[in-house]
Image (cartoon, rainbow, N blue to C red; front, side, top):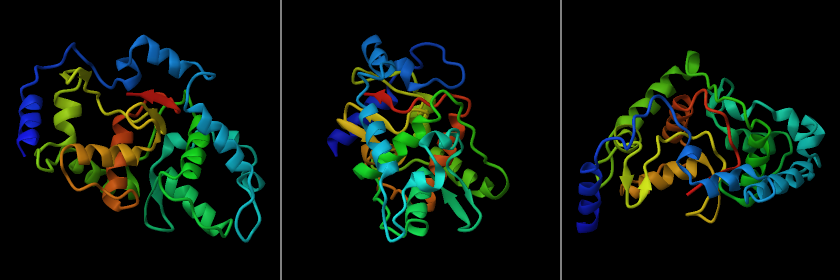
Amino acid sequence: MRRALLLLWLLLALPGHAEPRAGQISGYHLLGEELQALQDDDFANPGMLWVDRGQRAWDAAAGASGTSCRDCHGGPERMQGLATQLPRWNSDQERLENLEGLIRNCRSARQQAEPPAYESDEMLALTTVIAHQSRGLPLAVAVDGPAADAFAAGRDAFARRRGQLDLSCADCHDRHAGARLRGETISAGMINGFPLYRLTWEGMGSRQRMIRWCNEAVRAEPLQPDTAKALALELFLAWRSRGLELESPAIRR
């Protein structure tokens, strides 16, 4: 408890922004030159290993149908633009659906196979190769119409204080974005790099893993990835990142 209170005091005692910040800023610009160069180099970027794995998973037949993703969709390049629009409202299921959910539903209904688990190697490979097809395109999710209520819930979740540290997403990523905490710059919470390779994780991770990690950091109960609350927060974060180019596979600390 003493450690939690100390961390809370350090965060709330932080000075204002390190420099004036207008609008959104990608976490890429908070990296040092070496890590920026690592992300920019497709031969050195470790996330490209998951792109290669995703290509193989895309071509592999699975399930009772004996079909592959390529059999239905053609090459993964046909998925260009898809990742920039997710999460989106699924009218058939009457709920939000992110990229992982789309893959799981397709695997179950079309290939008649066991869907890959969240954060599994296969899931990360498929999400990375699909997101990579949209690299350089701006995020543009729909938050009106049937998605409006979920968007409002995500906006409220972003502002709600939680956990033993009694902090909200906004406390860190709005009010203190650009300030320093334990030698690191607090990001604005943009999610345009996912799936991304995080040095702290020594591997790839999804948006939902980052949401869960942040909840754990403030000593709150982690959100499960396929729940309405988690998907609503992901939608709001994607909206906050609107207009930023998708960078996957990005590099982050």
